[in-house]
Length: 114
Image (cartoon, rainbow, N blue to C red; front, side, top):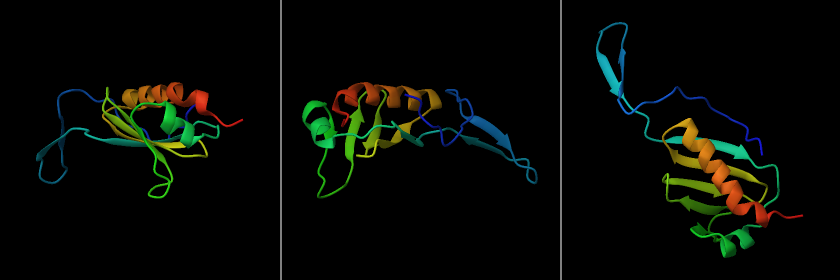
């Protein structure tokens, strides 16, 4: 299941990165708190079956067209859509994004429409 990467991030560490501006030479500290990524599983999903069979999934099609899958560790939320596309939010590194997408695929692969 190759997921298409839509954004690249620099490698992160536990320490905030320090940057210097050109004009004022002021050091600005920052840390990555939230990465949002999109991917395609290249399959059609049965969201009703996912909501019934996969824990921590909310699906109310009258309110929102996607199923909401909340992973506990790492604490990441994925929005799953019928066409196999997904949005991953809450990751703090590219590695967490990859792990979350693979975990989600493993959880829903038995609910693929044929």
